[in-house]
Image 1 (tube, one colour):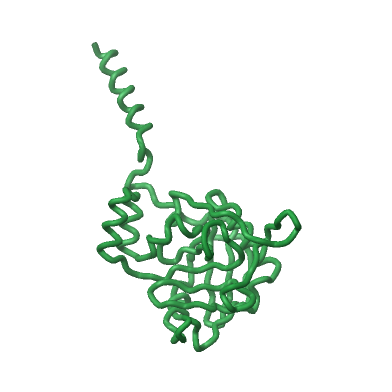
Image 2: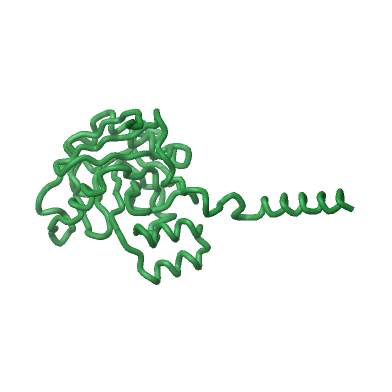
Length: 233
């Protein structure tokens, strides 16, 4: 009898573990909350208002990560401004023309011209405050432009929409605690996260802008350096 009971309980446990959501316990951190590991690639973005440090998620968004890091190494972003800034929303840059209509990826079309690349959506990444995401003009139109989410709140209707969509409860809790732009999930590829320098992002977002959301005081990306992360003792 004990063997039968044990076998039944073991089978029940295995069944539960293959049901949706198994493994996503409240004790496990979201990917964007995990600790940086020594040797992990990061980017140090020096701007005219201070330094922003970024981490990346190459397993979930390999194309976007490789695109950003390669452009950074080429110096593509050096001297480029944040052309669109919206307080309690995001700051956008990465367009060498500064118009919001330019910029190409590292990926080429059949003719060998740099063009766009496809979206990479993951149920492990969210547009939380501090998320680094691809700007686009529609599906699969990712080029060089990116934005950093600066929103610090979550409206009740947004929370309800997340619950209705059966979003991971840990993600809902993080959105409530820190803010973000959940309506952009599944529309803009998240491929990185600010881990240091959000005060700089906030300072840029707080700048006065014109009717096109362009800062009256130009903020420039001085350089983007790709480095290996080393934990400080």
